Length: 70
Image (tube, rainbow, N blue to C red):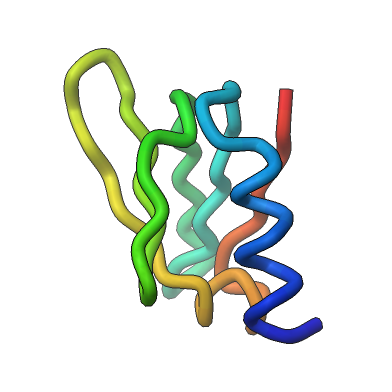
């Protein structure tokens, strides 16, 4: 999977609900649910009831985060 494929996939789902699962250190897992809000050259953001959270495309490519489109 390359960066262009990831960006296109996210652009096609802009303003839709997503769940982002973050796999952290020491088996810590965090889940964020919100609207895919903005797409920037190096990151994308989701809006969770007024709170904005940003993630890197590289984290998705390496498997550090998973994105599920609702």
